[in-house]
Length: 359
Ligand code: COA
Image 1 (cartoon, rainbow, N blue to C red):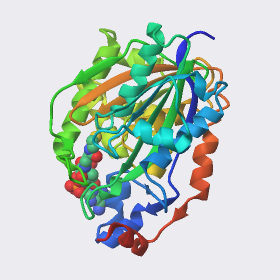
Image 2 (spheres, rainbow, N blue to C red):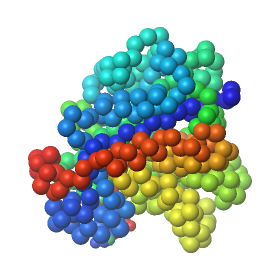
Image 3 (spheres, rainbow, N blue to C red):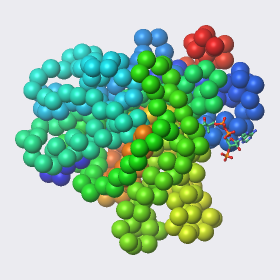
């Protein structure tokens, strides 16, 4: 196989979680607000000794282990994150320390809120396609820990996780070189230097996300009826800050296209909702959230299945990618990462969460 794409996938989730109903009881909120109002269910939380680096390293080791190549075949290692450990030293260096990588490869970190992982992946794909890779592969990782200030309205949407890709042949998925980007400067979600938690303008964040969705899918349609174009896709994956936000983005897209509300809802239920099954168990994992959804959609997909992936990062930048499942998608080897981590993790109670957060 000579086409460029994703040759291997690995995912990692932290070892603890909190049920959002326990958070609702702790904060004196009706649990239905979190489960029905926002569509959230569980918040993945770090355990002892875990951080954004251990998550990234674990996902990377899993992707490397199920790839045919070896670390010396890598020519690029890039990590997309908004959980930077340092203002200068890239997260890729922390990960290289953790998994023992060194050699003739380019190493860097990318930042653009939740879009940062997609940027790293696109760059790796374009580097491969350009010929500059000279036969080498890329290790790309999207890893984040999403925490808000205690009692912040965003608290039920917290989460964590990492997705690692080997960019080489298209065994898992071919990614089309043509993609559809849209960016506008906005302060919808940001974290000033020196502050531990993000600041969010929730309504603006939603408005930006809706604009980005509408503009990127308009480009995908390219003058054809979008509904016809989307018929060719088995799954539509979105960046998932929380499931209700995705639904709002899809409903706005339908409105912009002049679709009947029922038809848009049906599209959401059939092609979007199933892709968020793992996201509901992890919460928002920022750069990893879209790719957790894509990993779910590709798992078990027959070769040739088309999947769309809409990436959004506050600030804001967005890009719609289109993928075709390769021969290794049907076996979905990475399902074992998610199922294993979910089965092993510990549910913590509200008191433990309170002690963990300090308020
Ligand atoms: N039962 C069922 N639903 C309820 C409810 C109840 N008891 N109480 C409230 N709700 C619903 C509301 O109607 C609302 O749904 P709607 O938007 O469809 O009308 C939803 O729950 C949220 O309620 P709201 O009052 O808007 O929540 P909030 O002001 O506490 O804000 C967030 C919470 C998460 C929406 C807000 O903090 C936010 O937008 N955060 C950031 C978004 C983000 O993550 N951006 C990152 C970049 S993409």
